[in-house]
Length: 225
Image 1 (cartoon, one colour):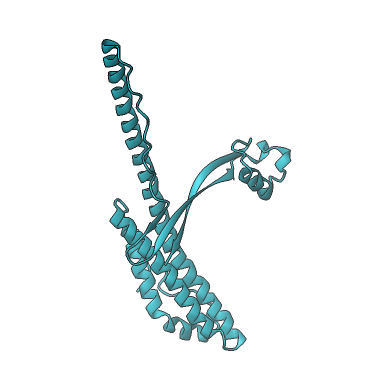
Image 2 (cartoon, rainbow, N blue to C red):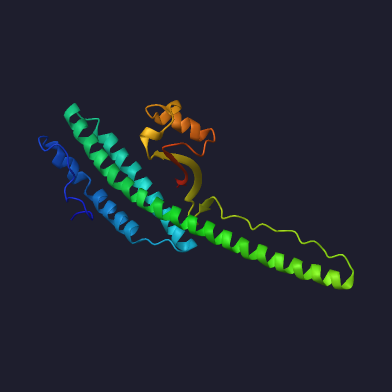
């Protein structure tokens, strides 16, 4: 049995006979990775319930990484050749599991952006309704000669930055500004090379425009569980 888009066997140094032993000891984890990947690929986050499922799925993937690391930690107490093989298996399994988390994280961020857009639309509808009502009150006040009450805008609470499941897992959405170099030749010599560290420091300090660099806001997730 193989993961979608992956070879059936984990690639480790074939010259080490111990690789077969390690692979066999991780068969159950391979099945779990396959299950998590299939869930992640099929997942469509379009409701709070689906978001809760996504958080749980990411937590399961993170816990599986911990379990694999713990199992490998016991294996690497063996001689050096065995240690090298075990670390190779750990790297491959971890990369496979992290790909599940990356997939789920992107879908959670997409749903969060959808919620932000819906929040903005709803706020705009409320503001427009208040504006129309204020105009009506002003008209009535003009006709009656009585000063019109002034309505205040009531901002809607934004979507929660941290979403928790009923079983204790959570995801926190954190926005940050980052960049990618679009034209190295156009980058100011102040950030020569161009130097990723100097550019990153400038972005962190608040710079939002830079020749040859596209600066944009991105969202990260941090799960607990």
